[in-house]
Image 1 (cartoon, rainbow, N blue to C red):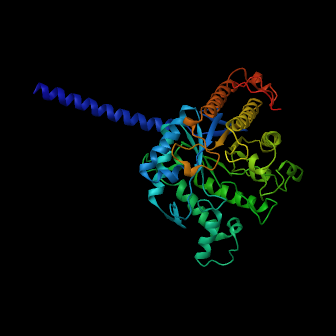
Image 2: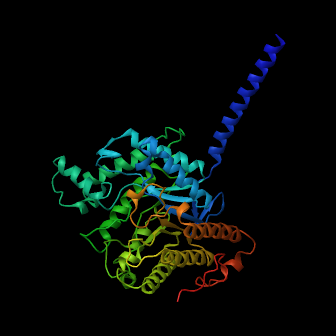
Image 3: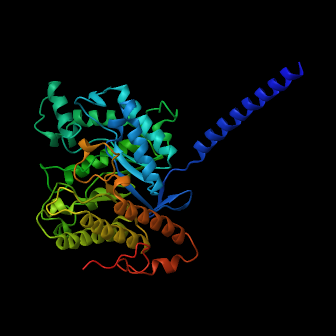
Length: 435
């Protein structure tokens, strides 16, 4: 009898411990704060939030197959070890063989559960997510798939993919998808996406472009409408557009900064939309300035970053992220050192802009993949475990940005802000000026 009492008491203690632990986990979930903005700065738990991050667009696509989910875990584990704290990825696959959205409003629950896993796993490794709602390009469906769906449904006056921005049916398709994602309850964490602070921000579209209107006004009208719509569903999360940074008609003198062509967007006017919380730029100098020397590409990169940093600081008064950049292994004459040199230049600028009064919150390299993912290699892929020099650069930048966030939050704030943005004396990676 005494033995039974002891066993029962032990069991009761274990049950109580489990309940307390579960309650603590729930409490911890509640206490994980959302990334917010304060003026032109990101803040987390009331303190400056500066970060180094990465893109891995493929996470949901791969996680839709449970036996492949270890690849998601592997990348998050390696990223976490390199102190990368933000990841940008797709919350769309429109049509095709492995569709998330099979047709308007019709979803594959298996793929949605893949996204559930991605969010749950990111939370486990302390990584914040930026989730994009749709693609500009045909990859994974994009605007053209939306236009095709409407045509298939017999909708009149659908001429091409640029109707995505103006046709009421296509806009409704998009809004329905946004609502499906934002209001979903994660099957693993039981937390609604719109209540989950693991998600740092929503993105309206990956690299919006519009051939029908190079002024930027068509895209700008769409941004205003959709930004208001997202905020009507979710006021907790930050929202960004997904733009590359091309200047448009609102400040025509700035078009000279563009890489010689227009894409139908206006960096200034669209980022002045009040529901948009921060600005983004992308940079692919090896594509935009194809055939030009590394020095010419570096000069352009410097100018591209300075211009947008200054505009974000003085005109937009919102934080800025360099949300995509990289150097392709498929470039003529590519070598590892060329990529590392380019990344060093970018990281140095990001660090020094952040140091010189904030606004620049961080950067997201394109892109990290797991081992055995050769079919996802677009030339820009980085496997941290196989690229020690690049991994070292990435890790160094992560620590530099984290250290800087603590400095910015310290009484020495004025000293930190005192350096010229292109001064390089205090970057822990010890990078000198580019020639």
